Length: 35
Picture: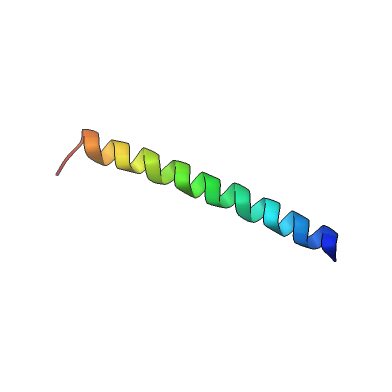
């Protein structure tokens, strides 16, 4: 059970980091190309 929780936390941490990175990229793109 502990093994499953550790895998889930690792997967969640990686996904959250990727989402943060994509948010930063999207913010930069919108900054370079304002409406």
